[in-house]
Length: 138
Image 1 (cartoon, rainbow, N blue to C red):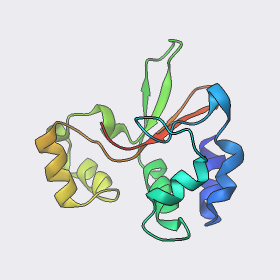
Image 2 (cartoon, rainbow, N blue to C red):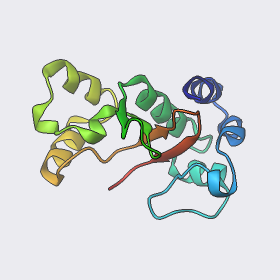
Image 3 (spheres, rainbow, N blue to C red):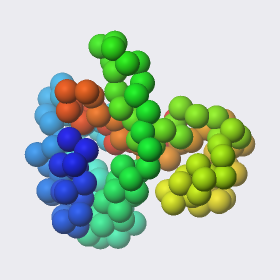
Image 4 (cartoon, rainbow, N blue to C red):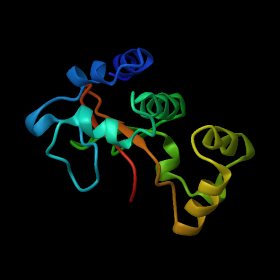
């Protein structure tokens, strides 16, 4: 699924993500509070440009970072990109901070440290290949 998402995002066409986003109970979560509207329209609304390429670039940057396996062996097991989501930011090594700063700005990093953790975009994919979420926030 990660490769399928990356391939779709690299086209620069948000609509290429549509078949990967699932539907119904298996629809990819795109907002913390939930969103019942069209997922592609919602992703367009998150992007700073009219074509949606900014949000695609963010998606690619997030997937390029390392991941963490959360709840291995349990029903809710999920691979989450980037792994910073579950790491204390104060404990990052210099190379890890460089990796994080490829996704966020130094100002964002300072804000996240002050607020208790990584809260920018993250991707979750189940071991069986379901794209569970692409969300930002707490």
